[in-house]
Image (cartoon, one colour):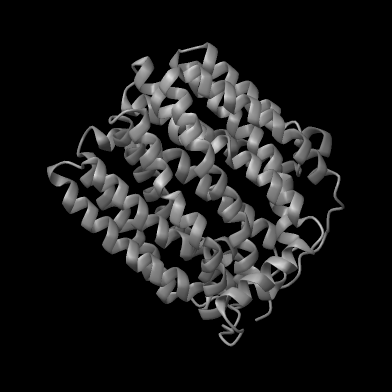
Amino acid sequence: MGRTTGRGFRPWLAASTASVFGDSVTFFAIGWAAAGFGADAASLVLTIEGFPLALLVLVGGVLADRIGIRRTMAVCDAAMVLVMAAFALGAIGGAGLWMLIALGVVSGTIQALRRPAEGVFPRLFGSENLDRRMALVGSAHQIARAAGPAVGGFLIGHGGLPLTAGLDAATFAVVLAVLLAVRPPHEPEPAPRQGSVWRSLVDGMRTATGTLGVVPVLVAITGLAATVLPLVMLALPLAGRERGWTAAETGLVSGAWVAGGLVMSLAVARWGAPRASVAVMGPALAAGGVVLLAVRTELWTGVLAIGLVGVGTTMLTSYLIPAFVASTPPEMLARFSSLTQAAQTVPVLIATPVLGVAAGFDLRVALAVIVALLLATVPAAARVARLPRRQELEPVSG
């Protein structure tokens, strides 16, 4: 990387990794607190954030393309500093269910507007070495996500939600400061005069559906989101409480998902993506991990099982993400990014309540549903793997 690119990119990478770590700590802490109210309450808390995400994430893509990717991220980060600081203060006397629900609604709204811009921010530092830069971001964020649940479990026992929320607010403040200082060398000029928001949204979706490879990639992402995210968010905390695991132990098992993904990501970075015949079996490997979690209750088997889920899902996404990025027009970076965010959010709104009801009868029923859905993802994965893969990424206009 060039001197200018490195100077701007590396501080942002460090700050964004710290912010992801803070989010991961809070993510586990909220899930643990919600599980204490029962399966139905946990399902509600973990689902409610998805509603504003599903409704507004496509709008977030339009706004980021219009007003600027970096500016959109900075405004949203400033809002999250205030939200998490207020929640930390409010939780000092104890966080009721209504507080967890309110936090989910507000943070979900802000994240819906931020995520499309964040997903394409590394591309603003130029097209040279873009693959390596994106892999570096992914690996750093995976490490942060792996560490978050374990630290979250420790902090829950030594300060509770006020401490975890305060930490999250501080990390948002750090990344905000860096965003205000960094000037990416290839940041596109905002283009506000594009008609109505609805027109810009329709144009982006029309372009996406007409671009080779986008639809099957989105279908495969949807399949993974409907299974893996509810497993980690809902089924795993419930399994931890049912089996007598402590918060720290459950956090360790949860972190194995990201750790498994990190191992696979490092292997891909070193030796390249797996062959198509191997990549499409990723969901089947993840399903095997869920079966292991269902039939064995020991802590070490839980770590192994969730680690296999991380390896299997990353085995497939090492095909999905490059195919999608290679098909993204520079002038629609955030709008295309918002489609992948929607594909990860909408299925969770459906799958999490269903799994919550199933877990209310028997946790093993919920795990069986997850296994069936993972195996049903394999045909979509096979269609993605058969697509021709582009070797060159389109450069970002400066």
